[in-house]
Amino acid sequence: MKIKYDQTTCAFGAGVLSHHIQAFRKEIGGALEMEEIEPIHQLRVYSRRLRAALPLFKPCFPKKCTSDWEKKMKKITKTLAQARDLDVQIEFLDQFEKELQDQKLHAGIRRLRMRLQQRRDRVQDKVVSALRKLDEASTLAEMETFLEPLQLGEEEQTPSISSGLYKLAEKTITKKLRNFLAYEDCIMHPDMIAELHMMRIAAKRLRYTMEVFAPIYTSKLKTPLQILKKTQDYLGMIHDCDVWDQFLPQFIEKERQRTINYYGNAGPFNFLQPGLEYFQQDRRKARQDYYEKFVNDWIGWKADDAWGELSRSIQIPSLPRDAIMPVEAIIMDQEGESECGSD
Image (cartoon, rainbow, N blue to C red; front, side, top):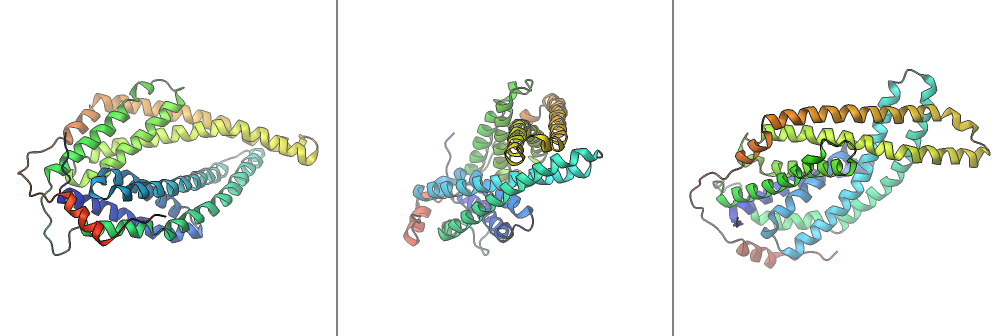
């Protein structure tokens, strides 16, 4: 299926990218202050949405620019992911401890939280450094410079959706759906930890791609997106439990050794061990519960032909031939006005 990146397609893509950049900018101040965890979460989300949307509209921009933008946004996403993951773990431990009735379990949970908070404080320095480098490189401003000429002015009439845009949507969503469903055979094997994790990533990529194009399908993607969000949530909770299960034995042993090094014996560690072991068993049980719920819901979605319905929803409708402005002309105009930075 050959895709024509006409004026309508590039204008649509520019609008999507501009929205994510503006949303990203609004959260930077809060992420630097670190008074709340939500700005970091939102920054991570919008950095991922930018990275998901940018490759879809690459032909609308000079190649040397998109490669540089993708590389820089990937770095910032990685740093934000480290901070966000720790924020989620710390927040979960706070809630977990509040619900504990047995007082002898609190010491271990508090020690675990303290160590994670120490790590989070160190990661914050990386977050600040990464955001400053992004600002110094003027990456977002440079992207906006290339996006602005592609967008329709307020006085311009919004054109009808082009067949090229529908083709791009169908092609990319179909590809992401195929990648996602490639892991379907792993669902009935709870011990396939790595594969279920990869399925979660594939679900996220499919969801972000669908959300890019959702406006051109009006409400047709609403139900599939809800199902996909629930799938992603299930797989995310399963993955979180797997991360805890892999991390805790190493943490327990390391904390025991720290106790020995400090006190000369492991005796004081006895106050920490009950809470840590209880938490480990709790996460294993939670993993089993999340997995069973996921499998039951998946069977129901399959019975309802949810993924077949998605494929039918994105089929290209019959449209009149569009008036097409070659994207090469748009790029030439941009290149005459500005050049990509080399930072």
